[in-house]
Image 1 (cartoon, one colour):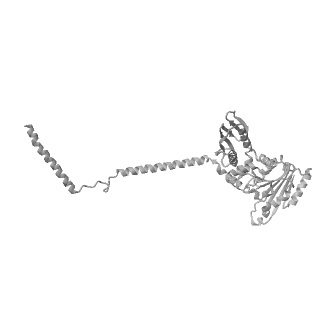
Image 2 (tube, rainbow, N blue to C red; image 1 turned 120 degrees about the vertical axis):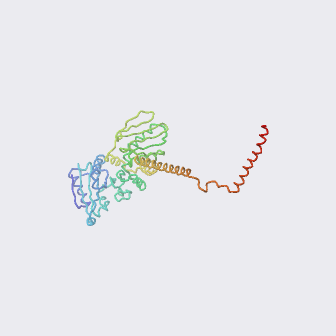
Image 3 (cartoon, rainbow, N blue to C red; image 1 turned 135 degrees about the horizontal axis):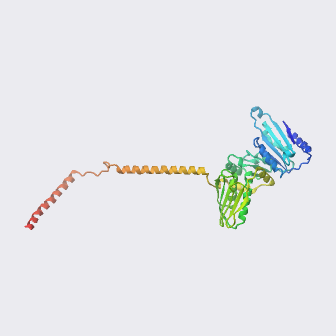
Length: 388
């Protein structure tokens, strides 16, 4: 059942909810929490579909807050609230209210949502896209016990993780962290089967995937060992390899559904590690409404402390640049050698040539030669005499 309300108020919306429950024959309220979804018109359908699927496990009142963009200055000064109330089969196992805010009222979404919250029930706020850097200081986030974001939808996930760490408040969580729950469970179970010490870890997955970064930070924080982050083609997380004193332990998932767990001394085992959809992730987050201290510790470890391997393209560019630098250096060396050879081949200059002997020295040397000739002439008669 759907009830459309144009230019309405929170009181009229509550009356429509009561009217809808009576029309379908369920006047009692059997919901356990209020889920507030803050999104835009483009992503509202997918977010609401995931929330309706999750409501089969957690019956809830879902408030979808959509802030409409005002195109003219006149629209910005005109406030209007349109609502669409859904109950029964159109709202899963709970109630759904679509709230479209126009003009100045969009700056006060908390005042619109506050009268529609279920009394004495937990409140969870979820930002599928465009989450604030500090969810706890957001007006809607201040109403909730749990604040759910999704860093995977951010333009720069790694920088977003650093901002989340600086602004963390107990009750914050992220769907990128929820996605690695099966991986954390499987790796912890694998380490429980062996009695050895982990020396180093390598986490392989898509580049700029916040789930890979969070898993690497969790391992580094818990094991206190160096963790290497290696990029791959995906999908998502593809492998975790641990170097231990008992031999290597690896968990490889190349196709995004079936993984292989290998422990030295044991046969390889196939384990199911399917990539879960958003409805399953939200359902898991709604099971636990207390602060997640493990997530906080891993988040505060810091992405910059990981040993990150650059992507293949960047590595090839660096290698090409190194080769070019080596070629340039070799060319400079050859030029220097050629210059040195040319210098050696040049005739000696006047300054470098030996100095000519002065005239008195040459004159003094000449009589010595004549004297030597006279001594040779004097010896000649004696040879003749001996011959006779």
